[in-house]
Structures are given as C-alpha cells and as structure tokens.
Image 1 (cartoon, rainbow, N blue to C red):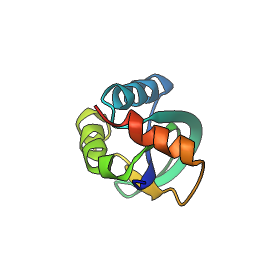
Image 2 (cartoon, rainbow, N blue to C red):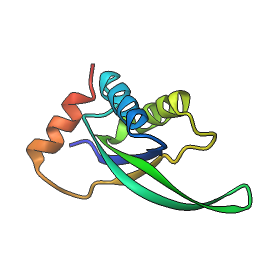
Image 3 (cartoon, rainbow, N blue to C red):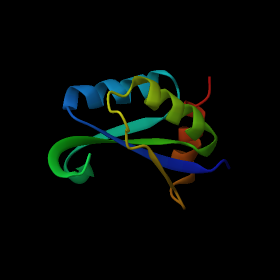
Length: 105
C-alpha cells in the first residue's frame, strides 16, 4: 500500500479555505479535506501577530505531496503559506485505499 499523509495549510477566510480545498479535490491531489477555524499566533516581519485563520487538512497519497505542494503555492494568497505534510502511520485499510484511488486520474 502507498504511504499516506495529511497535508496542512492555513488561510485567512473560510471562503478562501473552501476554494483551496475544492481546488485540491478537483485536481485529484487530495481525496478529502477538512476546514477547521483556528487562532494562530506567529511572528511576521519582526512582530508577534494573533489572527483568526482556517486550517485546511488534506488527506492524500505520499506520492502526490510534491504536486499538491506546488499547486498550493501557485493558488495561495499568502507570501509564505504554511504547507506541511504529516505521515499517517495507520488506519482503516479501506479508507486509505480510497485515499489512493481518489488521487489518481
């Protein structure tokens, strides 16, 4: 079975999060995406910022991460978007098989 990952990114509005998620699923770069409202605290240009954001968690096959990362960089509105991949260590074999199937043309 192929490796599986959750790719996480954040954005500044729920509408933009929905656009990112839909674009990824439409492009078959992810099988499923969840959108979660969060509060982010971070340093940007020397100043500590606290902002509401929306986290987009995308389930995908490990061999799709590079293409997914490129896609997110192209369509993201942030100068330096968060894009991190977290390995999935286990889970339902049927679900993980579905993830792979959904990320193929």
